[in-house]
Image (cartoon, rainbow, N blue to C red; front, side, top):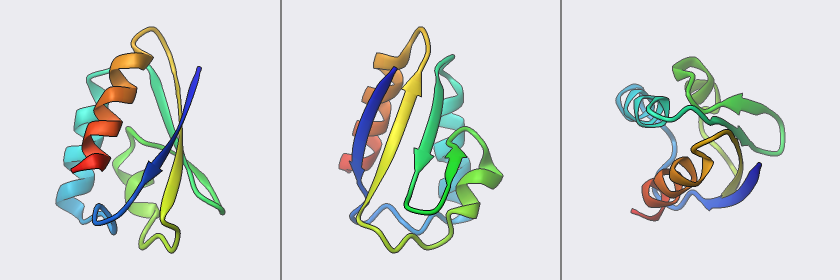
Amino acid sequence: MMTLKLSLKHNCPFTQETAARFAQMLSRYEASVLLCDAHRTINAKSLLGILSLGYIQQETLEAVIDGPDEQAAAQALQDYFSN
């Protein structure tokens, strides 16, 4: 299991289109990916879960990644949030 702090910068709020692309990107991996903010934890592979984040007031999210390809999923998350 891995835990990452992700800087949101300009990546939020998620629109319907960006949320769909984000969920699709993570669905390629077997590892489970959870995103946690101060109020909730969501499945990052779930379009509805991502959209439920709405506008996030925080500057960071915590990602919890667990599974056989967690390193690759973590790298994909870091790449996404660093752009």
